[in-house]
Structures are given as C-alpha cells and as structure tokens.
Length: 272
Length: 312
View 1 (spheres, each protein chain N blue to C red):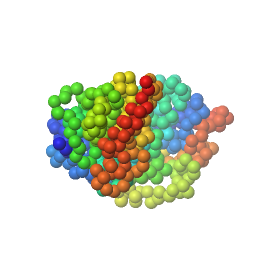
View 2 (tube, rainbow over the protein chains, first blue to last red):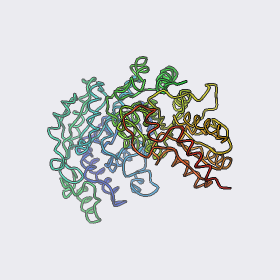
View 3 (tube, rainbow over the protein chains, first blue to last red):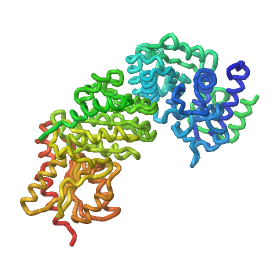
C-alpha cells in the first residue's frame, strides 16, 4: 500500500466494508454503523501510518492501536486479517462459540493491543502505553480510536487531563465523529459540542479531518510530529454507516446486523 | 508490638524499586497516606500521580502492564476497588494483566473518616473476578513478604492493608510465606479460628482467653483469600471439628463466604462467624472494633457457640 493510488484506497475501503458486513452476517450480530464510519481511519493507520509487523504482533517497538469504541471489532478484525494477522476465513467465526474473534476487542486476537468493550477506558490505557514508551526512550506512538458518544464517559476526560499534564506527545486520539450513538443522534442523547473547544481546554492540540479521506486523515494524524510535548486529537468527521445508502446516518444500524436481503443490497452497492 | 503495615509497604516498595527497574507506581493524591511517596522521591520518573481519578489510574496501569512494566496502584481501598471496578474487571482481570493493587485504609479501623472511607466490601468485589489473587497480610512482616511475592509473580494481585499500626504476630524469622498457602499460627485441637488481617492478632487474644477456660484453640492465618488454600480449611475441620471465621469485612463475600463454600463442598462442618453486618461510623478504631462486634470477647463467644455445635 505504500504507493497506493486513490483508486486503490477506494477499492480497499470497499473491500473492507464488504468484509465488515459479511463478518457481522456470520453470527447475525455486531455493529455495522460505527465500523463503516471508521473504515478510512483504520486504513490510514494500518496501511499508511503505523509501524507494525503482522508476523510479530508483540514487537516491542510497534506503534500501538486501541479500539476504545470496542464494539467496532468488525472493521478492526477485517483490517487485521487484511494485514495478515490471521486468515480472513476466520472472520466468519466472529461472535460464535470457540472463536478468538470476540464480540468486543480482546487481546486474545493477534494484533489487538488492548481489551475493550466497556466504553471510556481506551484513552487511559493508551496513556499508560505512551508513558511506558517514553520511560523506555522508545519512539513508538499510541493511537486511540474514540467514539463520539463514548466521550460522554467521564473517564475520557480524566485521561485527557492527565495526558496534557504529563505532556504526552506520543499519544494520539482520533474521534470517529459520526454523530450517532446507540439509541439516537448524539445531539439528542447528550450534546458534546463544542467538542474541539473541550479538548483545547484540556490542553490538547486539536485538528479536524474528513474522516473518509485517507490523505486528509494522514495529514491530520501526522501533524503531531512538531508537537512532541502535547497530545493530539483528530476529530474525524464521518458518516455513520458510510458506503451503504440505507445505513448512512441511520441510528438503526448502530448495533443491528443486516438481514439477508439488506446484506445482498449492501454488498451490491459496495461492488458497483 | 505495633507496626504500620502501610509504612512497611512504602519501604518495601522503595527497596523493590532498586531491585526491579520495571516497577512503576501510580497514585491518586493520597501518596503520603499510602506511603508511596518514598518511592516517588527516589524514583520520580517511575511515579505517576493522576490525582483522585481512580478509573484513569487503573486503566493507565493496564497500559503500563501491557508494555511489560509492573505497575503498583495505591490509594485507599474504598476508592481503588469500587470506584474503578469496571476498569479492574475489563482491563486488568479479563486481560489477565500484571497489575498490583496495593490499597490501604481498608476496613472499619480507618476510624474517624467514617463509613464512606471504610471499605468493607473490597474482598468480595476483588475475589469475584476470576484470576485475581487476594492477600490480606496479618502484620508488618507479612506485608513485606506479600508485596515481594506479588512483585515476583505474574498476574493481577490485590493486597489489602489497614490504616493503623497493628500487632506483630510473626517473629520475622519465618521463611515459609507463600501466596495461597495458609499458615497455622497457633496449634490447638478443640476449635479452629480462621482469620485474616488484623483479626489474626485479635484471634490470638481470644485464644489466650479461651486457654484460661481450658479450651485449646487453633488459629489459621488465611492471608490469601484467592486462590484459597482449601486443603488447610479441610484439615482444620477434620482435626478440630468446628471452624470460626474472623474478618474485618462484611459478612457476605469475604472470608466466611469463601471458607463456608469450601466446607460445604468438601467437608460439611459447623461454622461460626465474626464479621461486620453493617457499615461503620466515625470513631476510634478500637471503639469501632468493639461496637461492631470484632473484639476478642466476640471471638471467644463465637468459639464457644461453635464448640456447642460440634458433632459427636
């Protein structure tokens, strides 16, 4: 992917979105909306930005990634299998008995750096990883993907305060700002705007990005480099359910698997 | 002789800091009280105060542990268990991570701060999580042994310490301390008191009082509650015919529950209990011990009741 053209990125994104939907359909269970909104974010990280080695998932100098919105495993597992951490055939075992591919992220899966699933914990875990790396004079960075609804959790702000206090410049948070949480739109459930101002007030550098433009995301995420003593948050503006017309911006598909017809329709859209 | 277990913890941690460079310490604005300030002064780069933000502290410990560090988390038992329970559950226990939770000010002997600061549910909370080791040292010597053992083993450990100085029940020359292996601290044949923490020394007072009445009481120091030394419980039940549990914890989910569960499954035996049946209040530790039914006199009564129920 190092020399990837925009066309190839688009094809990869469509392929991963198909994988997401097929993965969820295997057990008729899972979270499509936030997986589809985060697709380009994970492409930017795993195929462009992060140093990581699928042959050596525990490589000590690797960049870390934490899926703090731990329910969006369909896209994480699809990306990890695409990278070669495990065979893509295994995706069909997602959420089924005796599978490694747990419903929410767990470190038993090769390439998963932190167990999550209860919202709000990932940024603190990333803070610990980033501080540990600094202590060892390592250059790795820790990337944490947060949901926008997840920012309702108070612990996010405990971590935000501590990260700027400790000047943790090797910690990067990315918020999947898809504007929908479990029950309804974030503006209805719990208004989090002005979001950028909140992070600024907590001492973070804040950058906005088009969360479906890999080049824009790479620029935004890479902008932490000159700010080694300040954590960075990228607010990635996305569309929930991106890529499937009837899932886009539809709260119904936060945590519901598509039925057989919906799957066929969605795959058709993503193949065209 | 009285010695402070938390001071011993602070000194032991300082010494371990020299020996094990991977140890980091995470505190929550109570670092003088938990005595991790000694470590902080000596190893400022390896010490992180996150303020009273227990959820962040525990999850950050998860991050440190997953990078090969050995994080010691220290605050008050009331906050470090209940306030961060979900973080302990999903991050530490379900991840099987090498996090050491050493919490002070457990139980009602916290005293004047009152019930909000007096953790009496902490053993139940932590022992309800698969894979967590739970240790309640009886005195200063055992505190050092437990902290050292915790630092050397892989996996999550909770060590419960009290606020006040407690009677020393060991000579310091014992070499047998092992996590998960109970200690017979006094031999006897008429009844067995299984105790942990500060209740071990109170059990000793009770045993002396009973001895004057001709009752020969065994005391088992059950310093490790998870994993429980089931064989030690069964041996005591077989050999003395009755068990009395003694703990500075709520009656449900602590030592009594754990011991009774082993006995009911393997060797049904009469069990009496000395434990808390309510939250505490502000007061002096010794007043609270008496008022809430944990004094030596109550232990004596429990032993007498138990002997009255012995079969055959």
